[in-house]
Image (cartoon, rainbow, N blue to C red):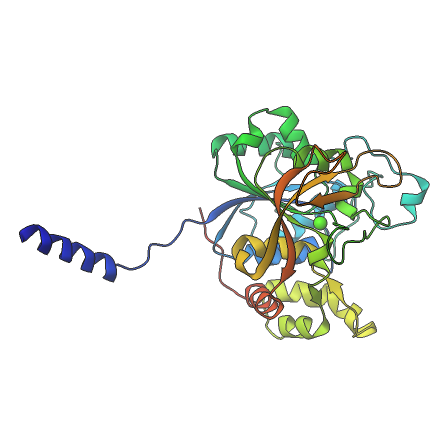
Length: 349
Ligand SMILES: [Ca+2]
């Protein structure tokens, strides 16, 4: 009887106890960053205001522009938003093997030329400095320090991540999860490429790195163009963001306002933002489990990702991952805007 009473009391205590807050997810933000309207910056704004995420560090890589631009721009954004406590590490200046051709010079992306960074809007960061440690060393050391705890949000070419895997054989086994913006799956709806007919930009820039990473065995959530194409940022969302005045929304207004003035009907796909939101609210994004690999043959399908529910001839290297295919748009964009306009500081370590 006494035992029963004690048990009843215990159950009552458990029922009335306040919910224990989950510790923030440790993440590393790996990026081919550039100022808005570029998507990496718009993804970072969401991450900076998400208390569920503990941004251990930001690592930069060549992609949309040179790695120098990525570094200069992210330092400036952190300074302008008073988030200088987040360390920044510079990574790979070029893909593992891929070198740019004349064809690439006529298309989007400055990854093939190690151009020095021009001044970001408002000038270079003054007090916020780059860490002396390189991105690959930082990735290896951080995953070693927190085995099984670090999620990497990889929203540029996968060069840094592949190099960390090559440098430290235990790296892959100790990463908690990779959330990758990259690829396009022609076997699903909306799966054409955005750079070559079938290749998505991040995977096209460094196909060898993408293949190494996708075959690593790390649990992967892949955010391909199939889902990016369902996330269309319009002036309606822009207007809601700039209606609130914060250091972040001022940056959005200064950098995106002129574009909307010129063309109010412009639409920007939210490539990297979908991957970022998936860290906080995975329930808003539908996924399917598929085996995915990347073609590294230097031919018509260089950098093309291929996915299927079962192995196909030539696809023996493919690994299982969660592939995002659809989005619950209304709730997604509401959460995105709510966070980007928030003044709530992210969780501190
Ligand atoms: Ca990116």
